[in-house]
Length: 242
Ligand SMILES: Nc1ncnc2c1ncn2[C@@H]1O[C@H](COP(=O)(O)OP(=O)(O)OP(=O)(O)O)[C@@H](O)[C@H]1O
Image (tube, rainbow, N blue to C red; front, side, top):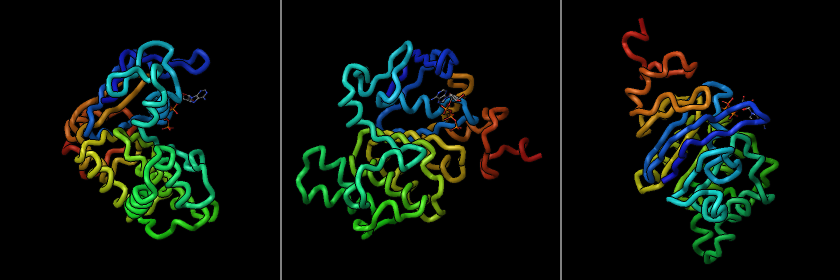
């Protein structure tokens, strides 16, 4: 479980998170929504200690992140908004293998994880390609594969679909859904709620540093009005359509 207890955080005295509390169970698929600048990235960066609360506590599986940063980082896989931020190797295969190698796994298991992770993002068989020669969408897929290969207990993704075409997006979403069914907690921050809500267990929306909506997607959608979150046609209520 990832748990935020009364977390506050400010950038240079500008408050971004204010006494925010939120729990995400293992195996839950949570979509995080909110307008630009509402604090989604800031919230997610607390999940593995990239940011530390000014007050309050973030716990991963019961342990405060600040008490055991190494445990938090191995349990929580992160996919950032800008994939270039997270590459550590020159080729696709080497980059995706980097995390499992650091876990000290056998070569056969590392190779299996790399293969499975690349297949999940429609990049099967492209291990030897140079990352800097890939398109933006392909780089985004490699970044997601790198997180999947770690087999984390929780997967946190910040706008991971930027630049992905529809087949790649669908493939990643299907993989995320099967991971959550298998017990991995998935937190996905996105503005694009198209075909995401049908898979999610909960939709959480933040505004002014706090959680303002936290509900099953079909109920949450009705509460999103006024939050400047794009709601897909299929999820709009009859009243919205009028
Ligand atoms: N490094 C920083 N220094 C100062 N202010 C920052 C920094 N990073 C973010 N902020 C501010 O914190 C607020 C929340 O930003 P954050 O990136 O968490 O929002 P977001 O909901 O992820 O936005 P978006 O949907 O546009 O990605 C914004 O007002 C932003 O300007």
